[in-house]
Length: 278
Ligand SMILES: [Zn+2]
Ligand SMILES: [Zn+2]
Image 1: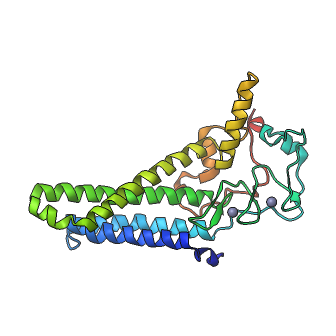
Image 2: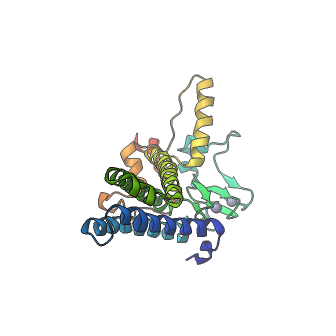
Image 3: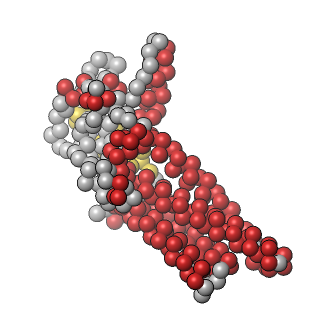
């Protein structure tokens, strides 16, 4: 448990933003549209509360889960490393070594300057969760973005419905209800939906190709180099879209949307490659 991870301004800002969006959606948008005493108002606030709880739970898992460090005394399996073209260094040496940790680096692990250690299947260091996104918390990170997108889109739709409903009822009520505060909340909810939606689409793409954010940059360069030599580049860990997704979310589809269902994630010192499946 890394409770101290919560003691950072970006993480506390995310928690505050979540609380603010929850208050505005339930007590301003849904209350204005249906009234919380009505069954429609109650149902909508329950659905939104459910989404918001899953969002908070995913955030907790992301912040508190250790993404995975390299075990001390790790010695790479040379045969396994040879299977991955991307890990081959330009010098021709197959073994990866971290100068800062003075230790061998498994495939897909990278050194994080903030965490001052090598992180397994590192995606990126995320200031908003004050933690690295790596092997063991990538699923919860993906689900955090998913639930946050769903919640902010729900909030945006509630706002649009409230606007249309009140403008249909009377223009006077509309001007009364849509004070500068409500308009400001609306702008926040629309912006959040767009930013989170884009981030979600991006990470779904990366997951379907079995790429991390770091590997995407590396793959772009490798593809460019290959093109220059008249060759084509294929990411070595891309073993097919559906298989790639199950490697992150798990083989059981019923557990795909649960952030702590990560029993399918093993040691993270080696990964299936296209060579294994051919
Ligand atoms: Zn390192
Ligand atoms: Zn880090």
